[in-house]
Image (cartoon, rainbow, N blue to C red; front, top):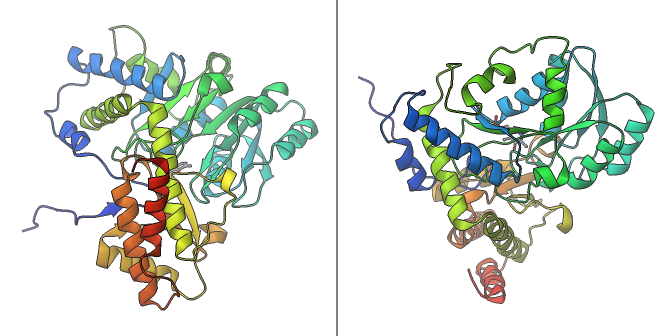
Length: 396
Ligand SMILES: *Cc1c(COP(=O)(O)O)cnc(C)c1O
């Protein structure tokens, strides 16, 4: 007989999923009700309103797609790209590469603006590409590249694209809840996120939001959206305005209870406070890592506080370090991807993971693991550096 599955106890400090608060897990274990039950529909409206607040938007078309962040990405591309469309995509990491693939699969023709992995998207290169390709009506890029730990300047990039008459799709999967995503102020036309990064939910839902200009573009389509499931015209029958909802698909009821609770928690904390919390614990972690003679290769002004790329020193084994952290300390951190494989670790401080206790636990475990491999360091210096940082801010 197969037995019930009980996961081992882990501390999730990788590129997602992040730590999930017991309140969210408790919410998800409440009784399943119908997806058209008036009580459920009322909760859907609250989720929508809280997502609008979190995304800083008044867009009516704001909802969680019933699938992970990748489906949020796909929702944006299949609805906004038509066969034959030329689309500029800025690629500075793994997820920009996936955007390119989405353009191709939607029948579009990608025009790739390449940037170095570990650097932000270069606004001048985007401007040059727009000048060289008049008539392009869509630009896409990733605000928070989880593969490198770099943040791009969404406000500037959107402003450039709009000046050339393009709409903009922005990936904020890792940004949302950890660093500002000001959808309306910046003028983002289509934005998608995920639940398992800085919103601290289990994976499986993808908040998306579309501006009026994006909706207009979708209404003008000459071809039906190639995906039935992700066609927003159809999804809106269920997630749209008013009390009358029609069946589209059976919503993941209990997952939505979890998202509701996570958004309630974020509202209680205050979004700005959450951004500041991510920044504070990132600085403490950075101080501790540097005290162990570890380097953060991303320039300080371009770093994502929620995803810390750390250069692997020459005297330790990259994979063995991660394995020891997991086996001896129960801590998960991430490996490098693509050209950064074997060269960096990725330490996440996403959502509920971003707290002083986790920073201390990681630093102590990392020190132990590195020292075991013969990395030269001063025992205790990492924790002291983190504590000194916390003391300097007057709080932990
Ligand atoms: C995690 C991530 C995704 C994909 O989300 P999934 O939930 O894994 O499908 C997309 N973009 C970025 C920047 C991410 O970090």
